[in-house]
Length: 265
Length: 258
Image (tube, rainbow over the protein chains, first blue to last red):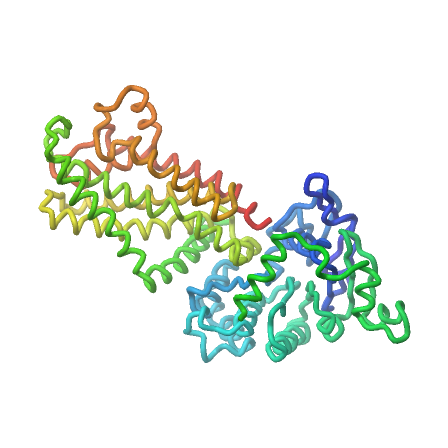
């Protein structure tokens, strides 16, 4: 079985700064893959390249069987994306947000109807689907965004910090739905996170990025065992990223994370 | 990519914007204040200046299309702010990850600015009617006005989108937006005819797309008003400018997600 995501020496430079440096990823189909690393490690840059928002400086990547540079539209047809920021439009209702997505994916009216009903059922938002999204809680908005991203049944789903700022109950609700997407729809999921519990509970494989380079790859169990018998994922993180989360990260990234958390209340 | 698919994608974006316009019309009505002030205060005073050559129409009738064009310009030129806001929220990123054609997304945004422009037209017609300005009420001229307003809104909102793609932050955009609107307005035939201008300003005004919008509106909106360039040229130039803007904006728009 070919990998859902495969990169070879994927690199992105901004001027003299190398944000992502020659990474090789192989994400098996129907797996949940976690990309860990401090702010500024290159996680978001990697996701932007894989979702075709950003061109690589060198190297190649295939997503769902298509090259991100040569066939970006084919890639886009087969992926879903939930950015870190709250990207559902607060001035629209859930149905209107979903309808916009469905139309942009070229669904017919009949298809839209079934898929939107399915997505509302999946996200547990059917009852509030006619309310403006700005009246939703943070957890509800995240679930709506998941619904938007799964509407066209993508082969690969990308999520940038999907549970940032959510309370434990809302966080678990998101985890359950991600597991359901893999189980019921056979999706491959690649997510970035700072949350070691999330990485532990949810992910089959983790890759720790540090200064644009993948330090280590393995299952949560393997990674913990490699550091020591009593090691937690926190220890793994510190061992392979060489510092703490607070030490790095650009002003813009930190501001973005804080804004997202603020909007989640 | 078939044309049908392209227009469906644009329509999807416009319909979403239409929901927002219908839901929150306060912005529209607050925008009515400015044309009222221009027509009621500025217009009344300048009507007493006898030296402005306005042809067969009163000064107030002469400036009415100019004020509609101004409303279109002012409501479209800050469109980029909304796009920067959508960028900060991640909405732009989500649109760009969809397989929709980039220029279809830009066209959808532009057409929704056109819808806002139409509301401005209704407002200015209402004020003009109250001020007893002689308007043309036949079907064809009214359709010409609507088309001109939509095209004008498309031009200036897409121009605004291009600036947003370049500056990327709200603070910088506000500064540039303020600097652009007044010169665009004053270096046009909106409130005085081209003949009154010094030669260098005539050149600027001829390069200014707003002049062609005003010229078309003057012909189609006002009883006794006529176009200096001819409607065909006015619409031709506006369409060409919009196409050019659309091509440039579609190239720059993906840069917002970086």
